[in-house]
Image (tube, rainbow, N blue to C red):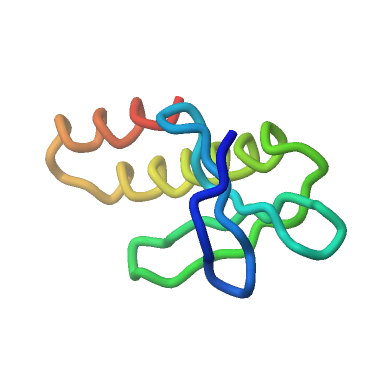
Length: 88
């Protein structure tokens, strides 16, 4: 896991190259803040977690639920299947 610099709300974004997304290490209490970018470009706060894995899991599960909702509204079956399979 490596710190990549300043993030939003005074958090240092932490990533593990291509393995985990959706969280930042907060400066207060060494907790991992999870949030998700929504299709309208807003952000949904998902909570604080003790480990990066917990924060990533919360992000992935939320992202999957958003993808399924969007897939249900999509007329193109190929796009719908791609959305559903992306966050499994």
